[in-house]
Image (cartoon, rainbow, N blue to C red):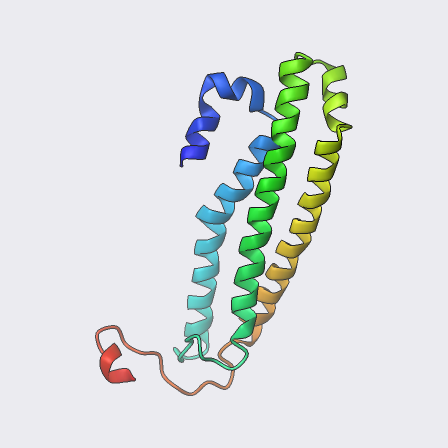
Length: 160
């Protein structure tokens, strides 16, 4: 998207390549492009494995997938912002001020903004891991004991 295009421009990439700025883009792009579609496929596979049963939002223990979705989305967004702040700081100190030297690298790594951003990245990473664990638990349990058949597309009005 726009972020990836901006990041590939030589005038910007000169300063941001190899910093946490790249990692922030990678976390958001991978989650949005691959993780979400895989999660959807996992739920479709579980629905078929359970005998094509109803898997709507009104299932018992439906709070699990809803909470997992919130934790995953907020966690990845939080990691993205934390890594972006760290990457901005790295680009400024390590590349622009210090001229891509080892001294600049270590100055950037020890800067309070970088350290604080890495702490926030860990906090949001734990939030993402909690969401992933909850999602895994939900995938193991969802639809068990459900008897209602899944609605057929086109018959949605008559299925209710």
